[in-house]
Length: 149
Image 1: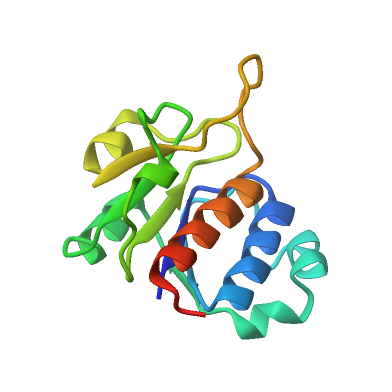
Image 2: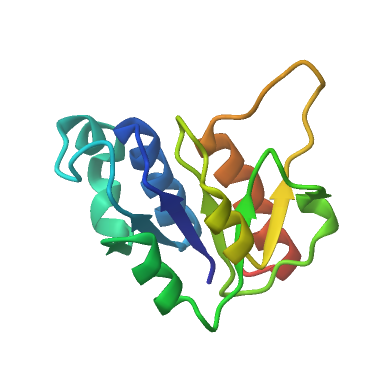
């Protein structure tokens, strides 16, 4: 199955919505700390509802710990700075789809450590999609390509 990784997420409601997404698609959620909130935050629990028990969640104390665990995996960074479109990429089972921090994205070291940097094409004069929407679009395409549901 696929993994969704969040790099130092800022907004508990977004993380909670991604918990629900992962639960529905059977994906593992990986959270790279530090977060901008505590994982016991009421706002996270309110949006995640009973999906918290249906989602496998792995936390990493740092990006370095995450990279060590992923040394044999493909980390696919979803970024507005990507040159290649997500629909021109062949996803493989076990890929990790990495999304950046809502307020800042990811630092250059994360870009350079990624197997691929992909974008979701959007209209000119628009900046970006919400990370929940980006995660859902990408996970849906990866799932479709691998016909696993």
